[in-house]
Length: 522
Image (cartoon, rainbow, N blue to C red; front, side, top):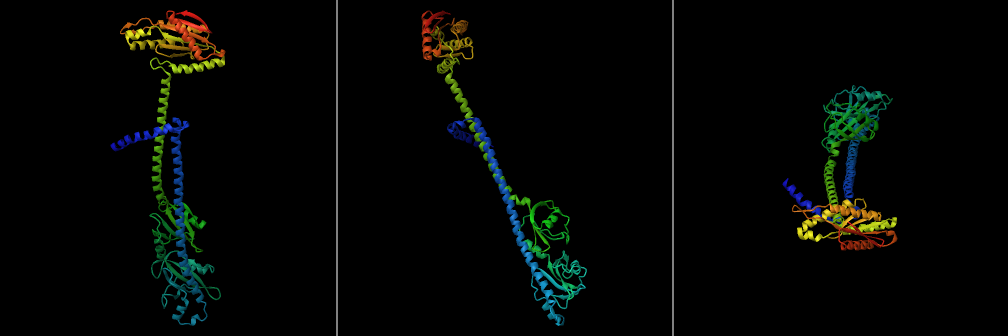
């Protein structure tokens, strides 16, 4: 924690050094704190939106890759199974054809066996190859002579061929071999006599270990599975976990029903046996009554994507945080600068001692009031006010008391000119001005009287002693801007009237109206 605090202490000034010139150099439209705060919200939202879109595309890529991998695996497995069964079936068809050779029964048994099985080849995991007569007894055995004694009349495949002359190649459910005692499936074809009646069955057994060894080469992840079903819903093989029973039937399973109904395709479903969600990709094996499927666990499909999403998401959140922080910092800096500029602007227009308008502000406002009066046909009056014998306060009591006298005068002038548009200003050391708009000469004179009365009531203390009466001299000028002239002309008239008031004994008002001078004693 101390290290983090130290880093924060070092980073914050650095960011401020970067932000200040940025804030100073941005376009005027971007100098608003609200704009930067808005950008600080919109930019992270934009980044989050882009991040979400990108992550969704990456997720879709992961699923597309998984589906393509599943289809490739299915294609490889299907070709191997189809080719192996095709080899066995060709051997069975060869035996059926050889049984029709003329004079076959007259040939010695050992030669007859060689002729019958001459097309038989060593298919993968091929077990026995037998010819059964119409009673189910072994008539010919590819592996030995004399033949092994065996009767398969009760086997379902034998009964199926006996009942249906058009059955073709039959693939049995898994069963235990009577000869080897291992789990097998039997591939069989019907043998017809010359008159078309049932003459027996030729068969070849295929060990289930063939499928297990084939599937062992496939990498599916920890929870992936491969399954091979017959068209009646019987599962021949499940990899990597074998069937708990020899030939379980899943005809009632929604997943298997979909396999059998759609023949090929893919979907996401729940495996009833373990409750895991998997991506099932399935297809029929060539024209055989077999359905092969590859099932990949969805958690493993998205595993790599989740790792990437975590890293990318964390980076985007950090960037969003930095963006928000920088935006808030820039906004804060802009608000601070705006407040400072407003304060400076106010100070530049305000007298620091009396808090009245200063000379600069008074002159700018006078121009505006004069122009408005000229446009509207109004009148303007100016009171030039000077504190009488002000130097004696500074000389006798010090500048601090002189400052208090000026502050008291400022408050008295503000109380005297209380209309919203009346402008009161300190324009010099002890010189004040009051600019009055939209007023008659009599009203201006009345305000001058109010000034004298308010000033006469002032009491300023110095070390517990009243410094004495405070008085002012006033020069009042009245003009009609729409008849001509300038503010400078008005100021000149008011100054001349003020000098006249001071020359005539002070504590009085002298005023000028359209060039006619008059005196008014306070």
